Image (cartoon, rainbow, N blue to C red; front, top):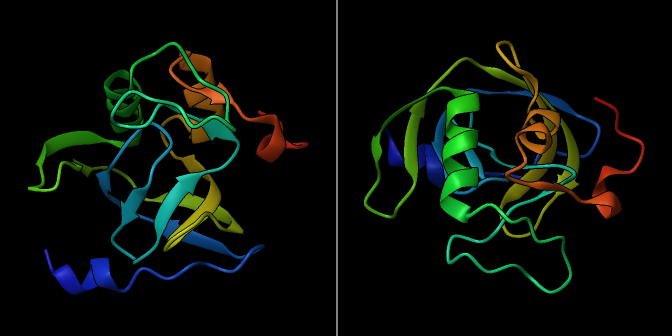
Amino acid sequence: MNSLLFMAAAIVPAGQSFECTPLRVWDGDGPIWCAEGPHVRLSGIAAREMNDTCNANQPCPDASAIEARDTLVRLVGLPIGTSPDGHVLVKGPTLNCQSVGGAGGSRTAAWCVSPSVGDLSCAMVQTGTVLRWDRYWRDHSC
């Protein structure tokens, strides 16, 4: 895999639709690294950080970070390995995403739909491994 793809991550402007072919997953709410360049932070949900803590300003699910991450991996595709920096490498179908803008760093917050499971934020909430984050969920519907 060309490492330049990972360096080219730019924030997709709010309101813009884009495709994301998943390559890597960090935790239960992302980022999902896309072959097309963006790093997607799923909108409207909160998962534990990979050290199993929660930030004070966000909802804190009971599920562990590993449980949430592995659930997201299964929803986006198949795990095919682990990168040296701890990302789970995945192979899955292309997601259709709608940007809501930046999510800190080089991440794009987005609502993404998988051809196999539908809306990923909704699917993750339904698994119980993440919580809906009302501040960002707003009027989104499943």
